[in-house]
Amino acid sequence: LQLYLRVLIIFRHVLPVPMYHNDYNIWSVLKNCIGKELSKITMPVVFNEPLSFLQRMAEYMEYSHLLRLASEQEDPILRMQYVIGFAVSALASNWERLGKPFNPLLGETYELERKEFKIICEQVSHHPPVSAFHAENGDWVFHGSIHPKLKFWGKSVEIQPKGVVTVEFPKLKEAYTWTNVQCCVHNIIVGKLWMEQVGNMEITSFSSGHKAHLTFKQAGGNSKDLHRVEGYIADKSKQKLFFVYGKWTEFIKCADYHSYEECLKDNNSKLTLGNAKNKSPNDSPSHTSRKVLQKLNSLKVGSFKSNSTSESLDDPSGDIGDNSVPKSDSTYSIDVPNAIKIWTANPRPAQSSDYYQFTEFAMSLNELEAGMENSLCPTDSRLRPDIRKLEQGDIDGAAIEKTRLEEKQRDANKHRKSKKTSEWTPRWFHQGINPYNKQEDWLYNGNYWKRQYTDPDIF
Ligand code: CLR
Image 1 (cartoon, rainbow, N blue to C red):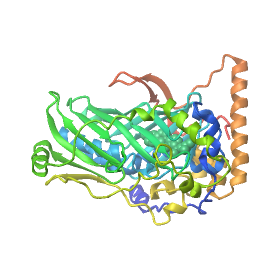
Image 2: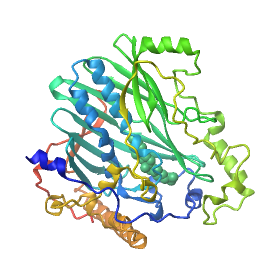
Image 3: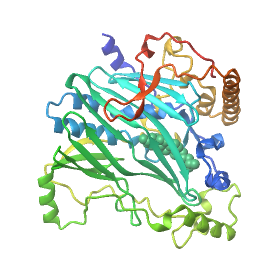
Image 4: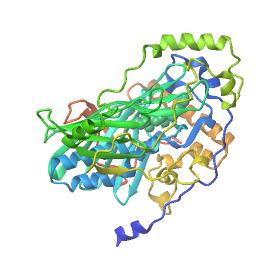
């Protein structure tokens, strides 16, 4: 009955008020910060979206039914296919999401319980910022930690989500690990901001020995590869068994490798499998900064002006404002017959562009559901006043609260330092070694859902 009731719960589909479309240029904030550690830069709240990074991490779970499907497969290859689907689908909600989530406060938590899973996230370190999460549903466990490293190159920001993620199927005694790829935000100076996920992702299965090698491609000049993901599954002896292709924004398909090769021959296709194109040497930071500085000498940048000036500021060499890139085609140049679709992205809700480009799932994450006030841990992101104010459209109020919370956090920090003996210890995670890949990790202590909270006052 409980399960039945939970299926019936309807979560909100939209935020209380539409977003304030800001007219500020991000460059006017960041131009003084080239080379700085971005996590230390305070940005005006108009660049934020009304979610904490912990809530953003919970968005990995939108397609967690794929983990259930994986756990139901007896064939390890089919299992791997669903795990690949899950790993790629976890990134789909990032498409066009250019608002900055709030930095979680030290000790902040976020819980979410849905039909397919429950997840607990905790901010376990402030400098460097590290967020840990643990999700489960009985048949699978999904956990990891993310330490986003932001690098500012001038015209773009590169974000490396350092940290391992692990999927375990305890009943099958099987586990998989991978690391998320880099995220790159373009057109910081002029043009329309856009984002891509780029790099290689290697998913290792520890008992079967299978490995998936996926490449998230760089869009490149003609945008042919925009958002494309391609790769293969190989067995222990490195024999390629399956070809994997799609877009992290749309779908993932799998075909047996032989069919793919046949198809390639038939098509004398342009499609190539391999590493993402290397960065052009022109992309080196020093080159970019020089270009940027040259450009700035001839421009009046920094007047709080919106993107509308991009035309006049456009760089004919394409070196600074490469706003030509996102012209996504939704067709694929090769489609292998008999390929199986593992995952398809949910369409964005109609009002998404007035609501920070949120998915329907994201719209529900900061909702205070009925009865929650009584059970929620007092450090839960939903109780953060600055995020709540932004969600309600009170930008000035949000800014005031954000400053207050950050000061409170600083004071608590100073206080702890002055007492020397009392270091901060996270309540639900501890540092340890990942049993599978033997790397440093944050491991869950299993206690959150007992709901016996010793709550530090962080809000
Ligand atoms: C991408 C998927 C990774 C985890 C991850 C870490 C940091 C996130 C990033 C994701 C998406 C983009 C992100 C970033 C932190 C800041 C950045 C939200 C979720 C936004 C777009 C802010 C950019 C602001 C600059 C333009 C200054 O697995």
